[in-house]
Length: 219
Image 1 (cartoon, rainbow, N blue to C red):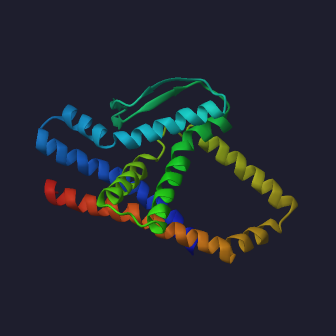
Image 2: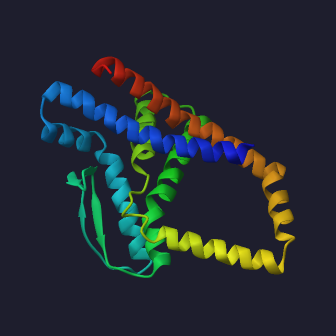
């Protein structure tokens, strides 16, 4: 139950991040009457998160010995959509491409969960400390998801992993029992339960902001 709930919450956060961007765009358009200005305002709003996102690509590429070019954190309209940043990387094998592509999700999740864990286990003495923590969760939680270009090699890697798993399953069917016991163990359930609770914070923050923006900008 808890692992499925974790997956559901993660997917929900992805869609809420998209909805938050659209809601912000609508409010900025209403206030400025300019698409160009609104795009730059959204870019400014999400700038810290975008920097973390692109640095995740850049640093992971460096660790995997993949050459990189310039880091761009200025917004651009691409294929009818908005791209807030990018990092140029050379073409390489699909495994490294996939790891570089999903790096922001992995690093972003570590930052979000780490910040929430720190909040839960430390007593801050100032409102500013709480404000900074919530800002980090909001920024990183809404910019960590990979774009279509980021995950170019991920599908190939996913298919390869599925095929490897099927081969292992063919020669060792008991692996299903092992995995079932692993995910149903008390330790695994506790980990996913805590993850479910941690994900509630960015989810509730996004929902609250979206509702507020809808009230301000109208439907």
